[in-house]
Amino acid sequence: MIGNDIVDFQVATQQSNWQRRGWLQKIYTGVEQHYILTSENPETLIWKFWSMKEATYKAHQRRFGFSPRYNPKSFECTLKNKVNVDSEQYDLNVQVFKYYVHSIAFTSKVSYTTAVYKNEREIYTKIKEKIAEEFDISTVSIVKDKNRIPVICINKENTTIPVSLTHHGDYTAFVFQKSK
Image 1 (tube, one colour):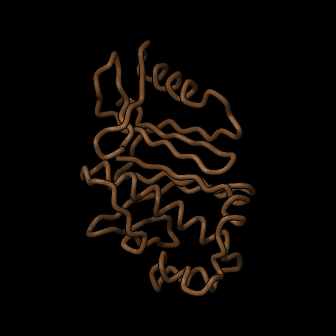
Image 2: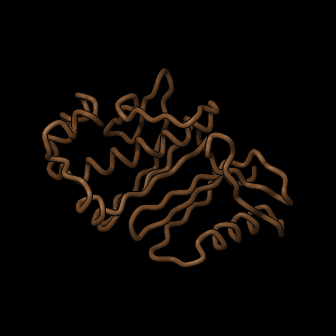
């Protein structure tokens, strides 16, 4: 299973006051708060951890078919790009750039296709084109299931191909599992 999340640093900084009393305590565990508060760049680590939690939430929700419910403190990040939730551990590929952080969570080593776009028009068309190219098909659509999880449809039939979409500020990203 896979999931992904992106955080636009400029928007995050404008919309959130992480230094407000109680803000960190609502979202981060004691261990995560320690990492953040002792970091050379606490704001970057805040948004890295947030992105890791969100990506893992998407993978975990898909994996177990959970209805939407999110308790960020139940997802604990490590400095080694892993997230623990319940009795499960997810690995993450996390890339921190100057303007954004992008995280991809997965349960085992999988091959995937991903891309990040800035201010891109017709984004869903581009994503569907990438999927069609990977699976050598012509008719692709993306719909959401009863739990609001994106599902790839080929010729109007749902598939089991994991896909995750994310958007924040000027950035949009996707990831889908490649064919075996």
